[in-house]
Length: 121
Image (cartoon, rainbow, N blue to C red; front, side):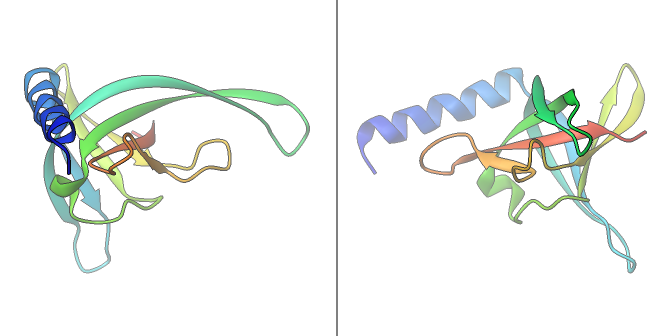
């Protein structure tokens, strides 16, 4: 890895630490959920596509930018993120958007991932 890449990664880590929120990544299982505590940056994204009836739909997702090494698992649709917002615990399920996976790399080195979610509770 180059010095530039190392410096960029260090700045990205500081940015997440300074502007991130604490969330819990949950992997549901019948034998008990697995939970991973993370710090993530949050953004809202609009996704536009055509549904099965030929109607254009716009869906707003709540995206979480996380450090891949902190996650330690491959994200899958059906996993979810719990976040406390204004003292209320809310759940956001990972979902595919516009026929794309529920996550994508945020950088060329796959150090950070963007997780696409939609609120379920």
